[in-house]
Length: 212
Image (cartoon, one colour):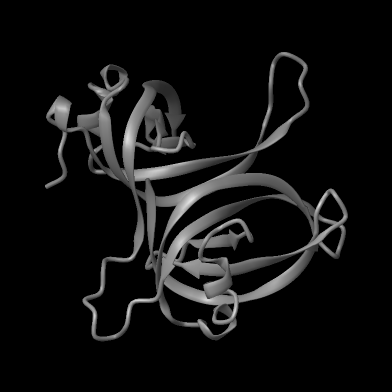
């Protein structure tokens, strides 16, 4: 499960046309964490909370928010000036707005799930040769989260030696950023937009990797 704790930047409800020509109300809002990462969030009418959230989301600006991410999609967004850039949209559920009387949870994105696979790959940095840690994590509903840890993370050295053995092991981690790029394939397929999640504070209890 991926959970988010942060602040609503803005939000509203918009009419969108489905593939069948019908009109649906899409809840859309932008949330931001303490590091300044922004998430484009959506809730569709099939979520049980949709009717409850739709009337209040426009008034939630600058309010504390927490939610679970049920899925995400990456697409090419076309801007009014003709630009096209990759964009990630996060499908959210179990949204709540903690009151000021409730203790504040540390802002950020936190994941709990299972490692599908991982490894450390040779890269060249401005400081010389190093390793990029890459792992894929799976949540309880089958979403795949491609994660990376770069050499500047304090935990990097500890994780390099064990990540290849982490397959099918339970994992907890914090997402500190994410990046969007066009992925190039070698089999002739067209380039596709892809998101990579930059992670830190990784915990792998079965491999004795923990966060202090």
